[in-house]
Length: 494
Image 1 (cartoon, rainbow, N blue to C red):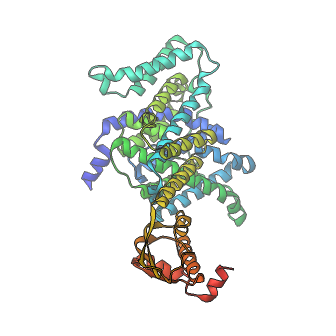
Image 2 (image 1 turned 180 degrees about the vertical axis):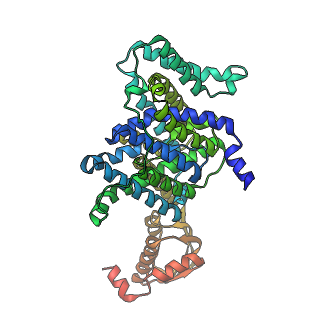
Image 3 (image 1 turned 90 degrees about the horizontal axis):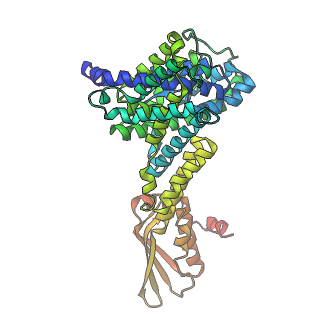
């Protein structure tokens, strides 16, 4: 027990604390921006980020991953807030948490095995592009000072690690923020700061129970939003968890992460915050800055609250250019540059899945839709490839009397047409033997195709014998086939 605690919380303490501080600073402008997107007060997003970060540190299944208020979730809340107000948003946040906990107990995270690597790569690239695009408003219509500060920030981020001794001991994004803030305070140049994003809260969050009637009407209002929030939140969290797994070369408990996200969202709703999920940008910042354990996530959450409540005067003076530089670093580090090089090596179908995921996600800003399109295309490509691996050969056993067909491969909805077209129903033979010992029947479509083949032969006066069905195929054929049921045959053939 003690050893487990030390490993989970204290094994990387110094790096976790420093990386947590960097993440806390990077969370502030994003939480404010996401609150504005959702149409609520900035403190709603800040309280949510604090609550989710702290709770997920204890309940989550992926150490070192950062969860907080996110843009993907904020976009889903706009209509609810506009039409029904903040109290219904808090109620929807609580229900979102309940649905996510249920998903964890139902082990729905296991469905992640159906998400192919090309979809994950497309998701990562799309998020990298979206993170970069989110910085463009801070870089358009501004003075040269902003560009100079941003360039200087990137120079510090990429150059500082090469300094002897100190280069590896302090996260370069933290150095970037401190140095550029000092330059801004010393020169007093006219550039945007964190304080210009919105008013920071001046008090700690308090327990809030949503002031909504507890009846069926309320459930009808919030359930569709909660369901969408739960699905998008879990999808983004699972994908981010997979990415952090790869970055740290470790494994995570994704079903526990589902439950942890649910508990964190319930905590957020009870403290007056909005629903949130894992953040790939901040998670990459954390990992790149050395954060690996739960301590980094806990420090990020507590640090965020302390900064905005007790050090708001100082935090409000941080130039946005410093945080823009950090987020540009994140977008560059997140993008899978190898996927561009591999376009020539990978199959066209794989490239199409990756590019379609990127295009849909970037165009719609809807992560769930992008992943859905990617998974759908990947499934169609797989079905098409497996469906083509079907061979039906034949040999004449007894001239003019018996022909044997040998079926090799997988028979299912994508290969049924190919299966049915392989038989010669007009050949004048007395009997046909269909050898299925090297074939497998997967679904009702396959059974229906077999029915049609048998029935067509019998209508031509040819006897049919099926041999070699394996146990699994025989089970589904015996249960659903109708070629031995005269009444069903007449109905099928019209």
